[in-house]
Length: 393
Ligand SMILES: Cc1ncc(COP(=O)(O)O)c(C=O)c1O
Image (cartoon, rainbow, N blue to C red; front, side, top):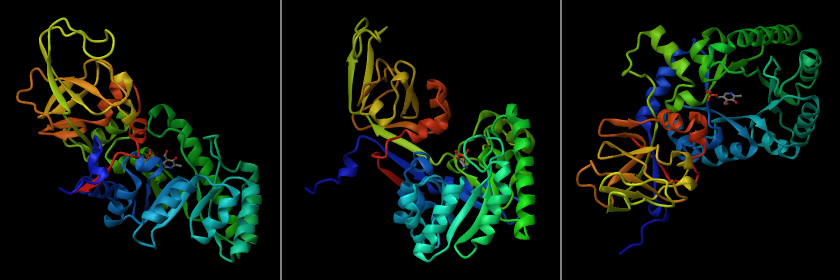
């Protein structure tokens, strides 16, 4: 008998639905102003979806621009992209010594300080190729970006160094467009951004390419689309916040069960064992859970090492045969026990859904997060890279 591949020996796997992704992309593209480009944000291992599978699926669906946080993530896109014309943009961390590599490979990167601008020019001279740069403008996020007093001097340097620098864009990032509580802050940021664009127009003769919006800003503030949007969470089928979801439903007349965003990910495992436990007996470590009746339990080979947090102890649930099976006892490093007393005929090997749909029932990451008080973003990106990912239709 042939040995199964190591991947199939993993206790769980993640399926990516291409159909769901396609629907999300077309919904989002339909909401974009004419001519606005779409950059797919795939930092954090494509928000836990798995960078290698995700990139090829996204390219097949027409994505040609990816945004990442760091040089190592950009290197991942270089390795996994199938189309050499697919563009890569680093929005965060790149070291001086990685700049030549970036220039050589045509990777776009953010610049947010003067020293980096000089180093980029030096790297471009050495490689004899123009560095493809985005100037990040500080508009009120107060993290990274050129402060107002530097805008004109920076633009002047870029203009004088055209031989070595290709200005790909001016950009900024809004501080929480997913909440109406930040409305005035976002409006102020946008005003600052427009001010920077005006100065740039004065210096360069025409307004440079500009981008500012992530999912929430794109969905909530169409006037802030500019020339490109950087979309992360929404392309994976999640709303940036409940507020953004409510805003969309209300302003577009969607019905509750007619969510235009479809979850791309399903995380599945299987039943490892079943057994009966007598009323009054404790299940698992210590006295965390006492059986209140004669109970049948199933063990599932998933634990906190796989991203199923200990705080789901006695509160989380999974789907088996389309029914909710609650976690009983402590979430272990590699295992959970779930109550299957009321689910008939569960056997070893039975499919278990941790996130996603099964027979019309669904566990969304959002409900997972509510159980544990974590954001979708955090739950998704904490799913270990070692879980195998596969694309399904
Ligand atoms: C600079 C920048 N742009 C865009 C995004 C995408 O955000 P979202 O996932 O909310 O669409 C992020 C993610 O945090 C980001 O840091």
